[in-house]
Image (cartoon, rainbow, N blue to C red; front, side):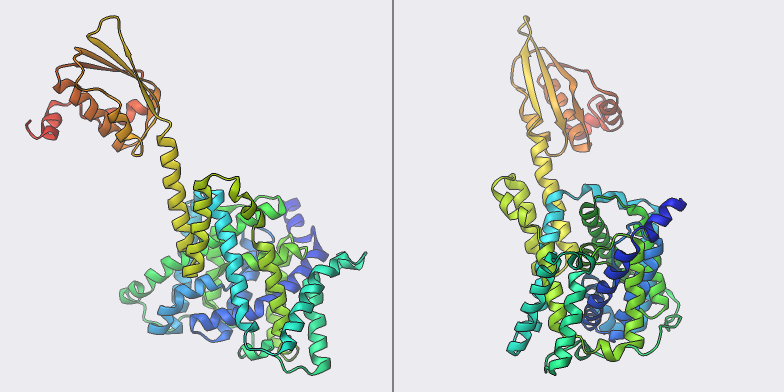
Length: 496
């Protein structure tokens, strides 16, 4: 355990510290922007980002992943803030954290295995598009200086790493931000800066309890929002963890991440912050800047609060064009370009799932809805594919009055109609043997289909024998099947 802690915190000190600094600079305008989306003071987003990043660094299940206030969560809060105010949002944040801890205790993090690769790819590509689109307001109706600064910033980000020795020792996004800020100050450029985004806090966050009535009415107000926030937060966090796992070739503890996100949100709620979750853009900045351990996440949160409280005069002068360049780099690096090339090679069903996930997320700006639609489509395609693998072979005995049917494959709701349609109920036979030794019955629909087949044959005057059921099939058929229960059969046939 000590070795693991040492590796997580001290295994990459220099890389984690520099990456954390870059992330902190990129977090500030986003936290302010997300606060504005939610309809709250910028301090709420900044305090949340500080609290969540610092706490998740200690209790989270994915070292090197950045969590803070996010746009996906802000969109869920808008109506609550508008109708009931900030205090109810803080209470909803506390309840959100409690729900997420319960989800972790129930081991719901394992549900991510049901999210297909096509959905994850669609999620990533949609997020890359949203990150890029979020930068467009900073590039519309501006002077040529902004375009020049942005282009120069991108050139620094991509060309600086090519410089021998020093290019690998300093994160290029940090070099971009510092150098562009210096140029802007030296030339006295009249361009949009971080200070134009909103007021920065001038004090550290303090512990407080939400000023709301503690009764059932309050609970019913905040519960729907808390459930929505908990689901969106866990979904985005677990999918981000999957992406960071791939980028770093390491594994994460998803159930610990669920509980960690819950604890972080509870702390944020008690210190005047809004609910948050993992951020894929900032996490990718962190990884690409050399961050791998918990120290990078902790540094990002700590440097963030130090800068906005104690170095605000310098911070206000950072040109937004420099941060736009960093975020464009993130969107380019986030997008899975190989998925476009693979459209001609992948199965059509996988392409449809990926494209629909992208389209829904971009159209709704809601990652949860897009992922839900993607998972639903993937499940339908999978059920259809598996259902096609079920066949029923019929073999005539030397005795023409005897017919044997051999069922091969998986019988469930998607293949039950095909199963029923494979039998010839009008054939003049006195005995039918249904061999299930190579089949598996999964659900109530499949058992009902078996009942229907047996009852139809018996109604035509044939004796039916079922053989070869495996233990699992026998259990579900014995429990839910009715073909051997005369009273239930009579009820099913409606007296006919």
